[in-house]
Length: 253
Image (cartoon, rainbow, N blue to C red; front, side):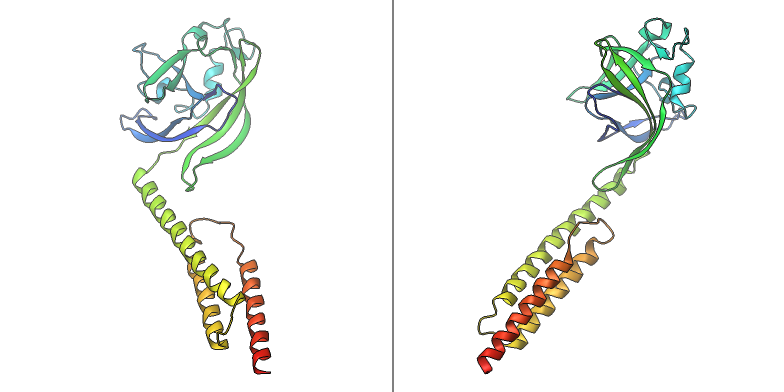
């Protein structure tokens, strides 16, 4: 994948059907994100990318080695000195989602390095769905001399139905947690300002707060570490309970 705007690890949440391994079966994959595109070679020159055999990496598992086979002058770059330079394209999509095949010249790319360093990284979304695994990262040179990046990213096969189920469960969990936090806050406010309420009522509110906390944590524990800090809430509750007891003692004393 070629990154044209200084970004990297750039995969879109938008999935598309494509025969990545050339077995005649299409998989659901993530397309390149905005500002990036797949480096491709339209071997049959039909103006489209038919399957993964016209990309670098899916066939052998090492896109940089495949690219190096076209480095005729052995300078470590695919540039104007190599015949393939004018045949390579960058596969992108415009805003409406239409495929575009840009020449390297159109994209302002003057050279692409044929080696890359190990840069393992898993590209995931907010719901922990994996879009792809970054394997190696190399460099590109623009016509202005600016340095960019080229990456081998192994695209993950996406299960869109499972992703939707996970998203729905996650969203329900977040909504439930928000509701439980509201309950906890209301009861904590009552604890810290007990007024004329009996100690039994205060203790009942404490139980409600504790249960609300436990319910909310149970619903989200398997989905996300949400960064909440229950300890501070417990401290508030205990402080409120202590104030209520003192107020009760003062009234009965």
